[in-house]
Length: 167
Image (cartoon, rainbow, N blue to C red; front, side, top):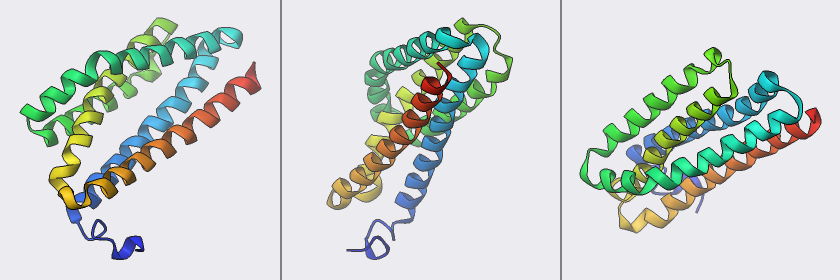
């Protein structure tokens, strides 16, 4: 069944939610690539690889610490408000990047950005069933995962190439 005849394509709320996810993932991807370039510019050489490695470790740590409590809150609070708040927090934190002068500041921002992302992701995932219903849940979740995986591939590849080229 082509996408244009797919019931998900005619679901306005799903289209809006999916579009918001794609925009959010684009911002996350640009942030990841920008971090690699910024870390290289800030500390240079081999130290940039260490800064990026530590930042990625903090990214995972933030998810481990905050994604489960975020899932609980997503079940108890207004999901739309959580999604909007998480994106606004991430926007404000990313806007602070021009003021970074030291590597530790990159670490703090990356941890906080990914803590906000840890609230966004389970909230987004738990919103899908109420938007599309159980009948279309698997297809909607599949589209969401494809978008997430494409963002991951698109950002890791340029980041790795940039680091390897510079080192």
